[in-house]
Amino acid sequence: MIEADRNKLGIFPKLLIVMVFVSTIPLALIWYATSQSTEHLVNEQVNQRLSQTSSTLSSYIDGWVEMNVRMLKQNSDIPAVTSMQKDQQTPILKIINQQYEWIYLAFTVAINGDNISRSDDKPLTKYGDRSYVRQVLGGKPLGQQVLVGKTSGKPALVLATPIKNGGDKPTGILAIAMTLKELSSKVVDAKIGSTGYAFLLDPDGRVIAHPSNEYTSERKDMSSHPAYRGLMFDNNNHIDYIDEQNNRVISYSSKTPHGWILVVQQHYAEAYASLEKTNQNAQVLLIGTVLLAFTIALIVSGRLIKPIKRLTHVADQVSRGDFSSESADNQRKDELGDLARAIERLGQSVRLSMEHYQRQ
Image (cartoon, rainbow, N blue to C red; front, side):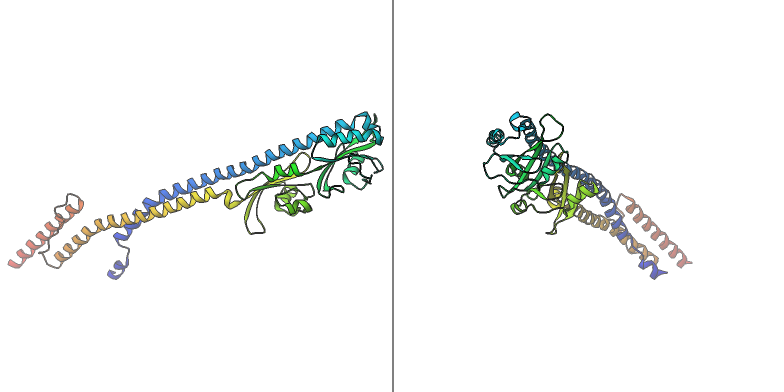
């Protein structure tokens, strides 16, 4: 029984543990609650930053396209254009080409795909294989296609609208081919920190505008990109994925009114750097508090336990018949002082009893 008692946890470690827990648990709970609140706030800020950038770019892209669409439709109603006569159409096409610097070619196409007139005076060619021509002939009010232009050899956006000479059916097509330089620069210049950027894809997932010149010039197929697939197949705007360089990336994707896919993304580490810094500071503070609490608890516990050990020694001596030991704590004004004086009185009582017993 005595050996079992010795193996029990003593008052000193118990008191030490209690004091450490009492001082650190409230702080740990506060840190956890603050961390959760901060994480929620940072999440909202990151998502808002990405979606706001996307919204701004989307508005610009839509406005830029709509401006060209309105111009195209207005010119398609001009009598010189509806005449479908080359000599009447060419001056109008040249004016369009001159007034809009990003338009490098304005041209008209007959319903059989033959090129009727063009603004650059180059030889006429066939356009019947173009998607935008088939779209208009199929009944759409606007045909569009991003491609590598036959004339420029560079990525271009072609918009086409039907020419109607008073009837419901098109008698031809008015189209404009535009460089993507202005549109691309707006998208490419949209930076978020040092790792965040935006890129624009067509409905099939091919690049319209991208910070990588290589991607843009070859119209790279990015239909397997997680952000594109998340929006097109899962209707999910927010995607968190690991890129080819093993970086964790967060992205926000949206579809423009004309069906293009705009993706804005940033490395997770940069986007959540403030949260990571806050958590690190909080962890350092928590560890420092635990160490400080342990040190204080060690000192305080030691000061409380030492008098108890001295009194235990005095009581043990009395139990062995040694009444010469005196406690140094009998002058204390607290409970330990009361205990010291009580042990002294007990020792005196035991001593007197033993002396009385010996005289008999």
